[in-house]
Image 1: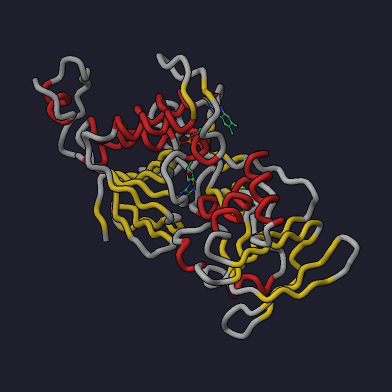
Image 2 (image 1 turned 120 degrees about the horizontal axis):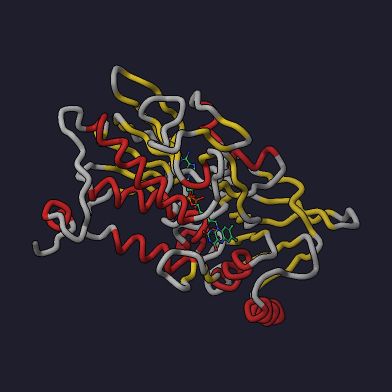
Length: 338
Ligand SMILES: Cc1cc2nc3c(=O)[nH]c(=O)nc-3n(C[C@H](O)[C@H](O)[C@H](O)COP(=O)(O)OP(=O)(O)OC[C@H]3O[C@@H](n4cnc5c(N)ncnc54)[C@H](O)[C@@H]3O)c2cc1C
């Protein structure tokens, strides 16, 4: 059981800046995110797109903003738990007990939900029997490409991820690329590369096909794909990879007894507290009169929620407002000379 002054759910821009604010005022925190990387929507949805409305930053991409927020956290020791989704939140005495899908447990007086539009989940194959092969022979993301070496891999999708992996894995694996249309959405250069590999027999291309069924006892043995004209092909394969993009789901947050309205959580604008004492919501997931779903609003909300956490984390101390420019306390925490 990990004890912490505050647990942040979500490592998007709001969660990251909130962690900074908590550490600055001397509180510990841990951050959990369902994704395998830090950055939330900025990294997952628009890493290369420029943002023009971050105060004092005339222009930066989603990735640059994320890297700057991570740099800003460098003086502090913040533990991230990636690839873990917070599933359960329960009150036990004065503290909240929080559990992730991987079984990590936290005990904390303060939970800050910075969950954005909910957790990003991969869009999955529709045949029900795919579930029993999931994370064994069927994957929606790749953690270690070496497992596919020398194997037959059937990749589904028509965007950049499907194409990039088809090109990459064709170096050491037998690759089938299956797409439900004739045209690909990925970058032209990658589409061209894939076409050359197809011509050279390195990639078998199946367009206008979709997955119909998966077969195998224990391990996956073969799949059936169906053409638009209903023709069915049986393909022997060791692995199946699906790259159909992400969907956003409020998921387990909906079951924690919070005051939820249209997939957002109602908060007050002084502490950003929800209807549950010690649970705060900041960033895109919170709502209040006049709420703007902008990154700059999340920063402000996180700063106030962090200060609100102080009372429950340090009941015998009084929070004292200080500037980073002039406070020796804050400069020490930032690792700067006083
Ligand atoms: C295309 C596009 C362009 C945009 N351009 C701008 C712009 O120019 N300027 C601007 O200010 N804003 C812009 N935005 C909006 C901005 O990205 C959001 O306001 C911002 O990302 C919200 O940050 P957040 O940290 O609150 O949530 P998010 O960035 O959504 O991060 C939330 C994180 O919480 C995680 N999470 C959720 N539930 C759980 C759970 N149960 N367990 C574990 N983890 C969980 C998610 O995986 C996610 O990583 C844009 C958005 C889009 C889609």
